[in-house]
Image 1 (cartoon, rainbow, N blue to C red):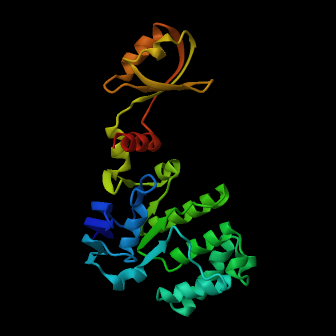
Image 2: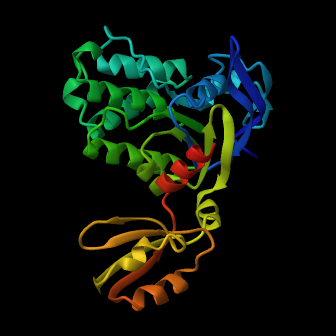
Image 3: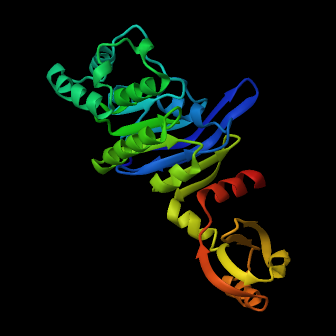
Length: 298
């Protein structure tokens, strides 16, 4: 059974189509990246899944049930605009959200201190939320999202405002949630993080789906266009526009993007005519490159 499925979901604000006939599905135990540039419709879509706003058309199925508001207790949601009660104490905020999601007191009391200590919030448990740094408020809100072990975890920009150490901590917990069988849907502008984490992605632009599917398959479909190259000698062949779309020289090596249809072997033969090659690696395009290519072409 799919954890989440969207069927032809659309939403307009005045005359602006924010989301256009969007379809995708997410299975249990899947890390799903919901990607796109600013204004693409990502946050609008996530809010429709949570029934904060309603779609104009289409259907959203949660755990096999259509428009099942009663199942929202089995969802954890981290909104883009963080929303904690600022006058609450840290531990009170966790207790409040746990009860809101139907947890029994004995269950959440056993977990709260463990989570607070893991996120270095133990010393702040009796502080008011407004006394915390923005980074610690972000961590606290993330804890309210996963404390009740939801079947579906929705994270809108989960790494925003976090330092590298805490980004890694959040990623570790996301992977743990996936391992226990939860479906994770998250949006981010950090393509390198999405590439490391995702099993599948959906890329939208101007409210329309541009790409959807298994990330490894998507990267494979774009072909081995990138070459990592180190050489001594002439570099005239890098200017050959019949072979090379563009290249970046990083000093110790050159990263070359081949023209569509050019085989890496053909480029290697041409390079050997001009230089001594000390390193030659064929690489798949990065998610960042795929993202730029799709968005620019649309």
